[in-house]
Image (cartoon, rainbow over all chains, first blue to last red; front, side, top):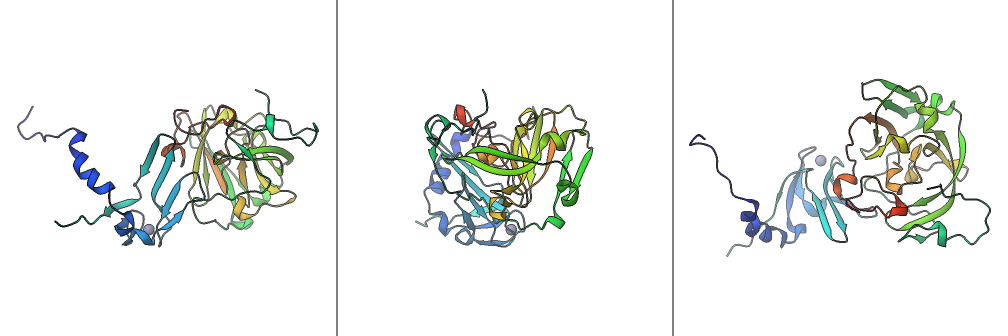
Length: 92
Length: 198
Ligand SMILES: [Zn+2]
């Protein structure tokens, strides 16, 4: 093993940051469409809910940005269609 | 398991015709995960791409020249409604696949608008699946998948891809739009295969 091999933690170490993220109101978030690069408030996405799951599409190019499927025991989240989602954290 | 025959067994439909967890509806709910594509027949085409890259192609005129069938089938949506005895006209996948040389086990249906759904190829043949272009004697409305949609009524309705534009055949099972987000890879309503792992 070489000395400059990057180290990593196990996924549990993300718990604190994730708890913070998923506790916030997504309507206050901004994001970038991975399809066309459009940046905007998530609240301006086009949300389709008369479907087997919830689908948020880009207001500009109609690409899928987010999919959420709720099953009796799980929630599936797919954020592949977003380059990023910016969620403002409370400043303390 | 035999297919559910619409038959003339009386008007007391419901009970035995309803898979577990379904309720009967008489309207035709529209489910959409995106904007409705409006594809003119003259711009429509249907392709079958084999695992070796061979492509068979039909434009609307060639498609309409194929022998078609009247189809009466029950529909079962994973959102729990079922609609019994629906009338369609379409071209059997047996007809479309007759001259396609393939040893593939799986198919991915692709739609205008980007939707996909995966099916075993054996569920698309032997009189089980159609590309349908009429509903109730009328050209299929865009909101229900027109000009043409896949119709695979023995599986949950998300497998009957609206606005279908082709099949891609493969040796491996890839997952489609809903199947990659928690829905069952096969979707047999009689086994209540709604979600992955059911
Ligand atoms: Zn976009």
